[in-house]
Length: 283
Image (cartoon, rainbow, N blue to C red; front, top):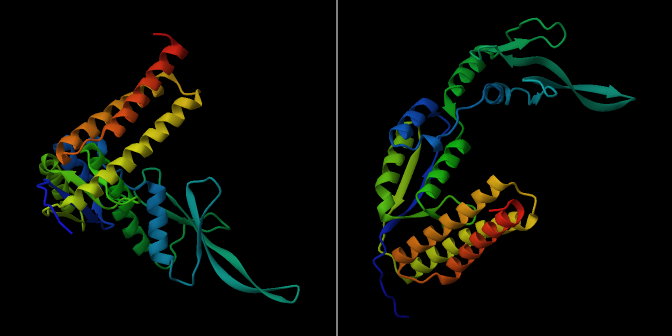
């Protein structure tokens, strides 16, 4: 087999994220890069309550930690052996309910029978965890933040489920700055792997781009064919088709490979959106 090396500048990027990313540090760092629109939101008070209860009581007698109806509170219930009609069974007895204070600074534990404030075992540990969680971003939110930034930088996913991306060289300075922000904000690691790419690498990137663009175009076309989308939303679909075409053109230059079929599909989606807008709403 004859292999030909192609000088394809760029890098494969991926990351490993912790659970302690500071929301303030992340927002401040990305704001300094002009990327604050992509920052991750800190945990909600209700989410912080659930995390604190799970970390504190999740291993103590295997309680259930369930939200109380549609209220902003959780109930912690412990299993108890009971006999029903002569049959051994397990019932769950509610030990306490937990909500957050009006100013969201602390959790409030209450008796499920009297409603009085109580302090069960593990109370202080749970409060400490809650306080910390109120200043941090969940791992999945940081991952979504990074994925959106990679998309903004015209990166492509090398796996269907994401997690591994390729970025062109001219975007790496920005990504490296983002990586520093992410790593400085918590126990996170962001990796870049630069290699000499061969023809198989070009094929992998082309396939990834093709899959990604086709997936988005299928969604756009389905929205257009649906016929019940509003004018502003339809215009956003048209803009996205135009942006996808620009991305395809950029990758043609990077890869040195013609991607005519993808450009044609983008053009068709753009035209279909424009025609639908004119037909439904007038010029």
